[in-house]
Image (cartoon, rainbow, N blue to C red; front, side):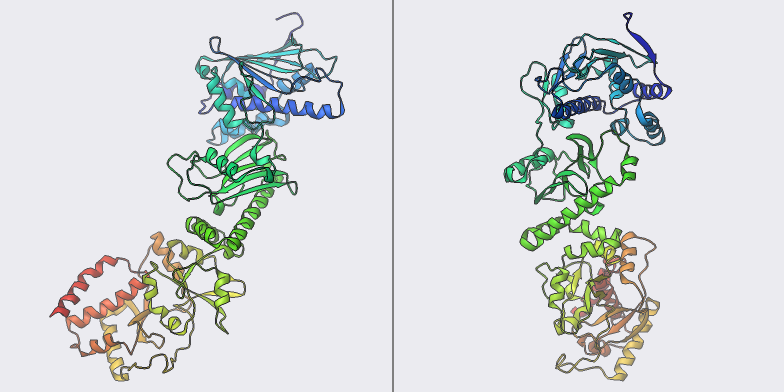
Length: 615
């Protein structure tokens, strides 16, 4: 040390922090370069702001830039900017201490949770010190923008002390010299540094020059900050392909720029397919989060609700500081504001897509409709928001998609409820006996055939002023007119009572009751809930979850006009054939309901019936 150089001791917090950084294991040490480049970018921004009102600065015509040079043999990296620089007092303040207890918060975060340190660096005011992950020693030389300022040096090895003294630096700005550890020699390679810059710092608004190259390594201008009218459709697609490596074009892009209630820029995409491609770069859900063009989170899951987690893209906020803890951001309400703005914009774009391009919206629904259903199931309070986006097949329009608004427009005079029916698949559900009454009268019924529908119905109870009603439980006119069944001949009361009694004997405790039905016209039987307050959706949910599922005991309703029942009466009472047909009628009803616990078990009985029929 020269006579003018002084030695200082780090504060206890800083020493503890350095110990964690140097001696802990890291999966991704490259974050140090992001931190140093973001600091350089801040210094350049501050100088540019200063020069708006003050031209009396050192080297006013010097290019605002960042220069990186590498010496692989000596394992040295030098990063120099032409930014605002620092005085001696500023060096002590900025490099000798950590403001606002950033070190303590960082230490608490790394010790209290199984977090990768590379994921929390940058969220606290400790970014510069991340350099000690890779450095044996660091030397900093800085000269303030003030004309009369003298250059100052700062150096440390990551031990207990650091030195401050004069420096030989004629140019304005800050120069950082890093002696790499043997284990970090990979970073003394221009190709490696280029990759890191492209990943984390590609959109810093100042040129970053590497080695002797006169062309900037980074793009500098970010597409999401460009004016929408200046970006072509092909540029949007190309950016999507570059950031995701997906070959399928996105279904939709959303380019957003707002100043209130928060300042943000966003470029979001709805992928063409829900399933990620084999070579996709995006291995997790979440958006890229930038602040002032610096990437701080590659997979941020707090910017959109979970039901929109399929969205891809970039969000950049001027209001989000780089060195701030996650807890502080959430406590300030900033993330909730960003989330609200982005969610509203995505839903608005989906609404416009559904209104202006029904075919494209159907493509979206086929790929991502399950996410919206899950949103209603997990968050019933979102049902009113999400229900306009739902699409269904119906008994009257089984080949096309209908919204709830479409259904309401087709409702018959006096209809006060939206009817639905849950089943196993789109073909068998159309043969459900519950539909007999509604088919005969041309009443539209929503057909719900996906497992997730049962969960969705737990949260979706109403659309506008119309309640949703399961047709199996719907109250209907139970006295059919002659016009409905012109050729139907009922069993006599005595015959019907005899048959009902036989069903009860064969089925025993499998059903709570057997009775005649007045709402069946095509089907031989149907199962109805014994308790009018029963929840068939909950029964189906329990079945899918495998939670103590037992076949629910229901009422078996018989169609007195059906020829199968008339033929069944002609069989000898108590005969094997009559018994197995009764059991098959009951289990057919279970199959149609999607409630049969073991569908394959009916095969043996069906073979018995076939054998009897062939005789």
